[in-house]
Length: 267
Ligand SMILES: Nc1ncnc2c1ncn2[C@@H]1O[C@H](COP(=O)(O)OP(=O)(O)O)[C@@H](O)[C@H]1O
Ligand SMILES: [Mg+2]
Image (tube, rainbow, N blue to C red; front, top):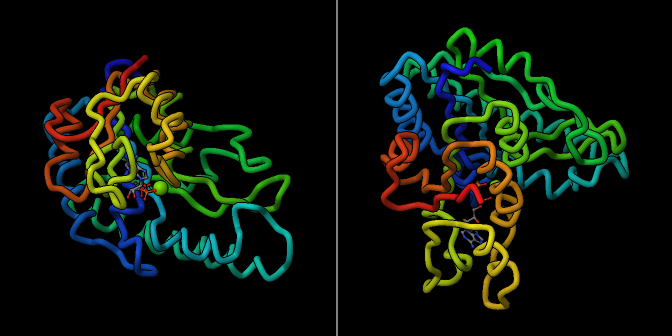
């Protein structure tokens, strides 16, 4: 990767780009303001590039779960679900691309399968040639969590968080930012525990105590993010988890000036 470029790796969580509770509901307002913030960041220097990953939210998770897509092919009734999840994700991606492009970002959609190949639910090999070509020519590659082919299980799900992990390893970004629907990583799930406290600096030892504490409740997807956050922090100069539903938080993180959010320590 060209060392003079400043690369920002941004995850737009499914909980930000869609309404998690309502099947296939696109959150246009959020995506439009995040696109404007990305464009502001890019406009500040011609050496900057942004690589974007988005999640599935209610376009992906609901049907993926109903048809057990992650587990792979067990019976033919899942095939319809596999096809539908892929179709729904392309619909979501197309709407996100529309917002990015209408804010003037030359963004190009690169499905997960053009970057990684999967065997037994894990990344088996990576090919960053299209990502690199896009960046070299000043474009912003956009990839997304998806229902993908798996050379052992026929199909599975790859999450946006895993794509962030692969991309961070290759790109060595200046900054990596996860935009989600809460202010950052808390000491327990803030959606169900009103006294949950925001962790401003997440270190390896905070992570261990989070996982060991009986009171802590790092569940579901936040647990999946925790599993990749430190590896990503090792590859990025700065790594943040911020609320993508609050205007200005992404741009502050891209500039390295976070007032409210979680910074992940390098170790
Ligand atoms: N300790 C925690 N800190 C923050 N969020 C948590 C925690 N434990 C569970 N969560 C849940 O994780 C959710 C964010 O993950 P997810 O919905 O997968 O977002 P994304 O779409 O960004 O991947 C929050 O809405 C919250 O309910
Ligand atoms: Mg998630």
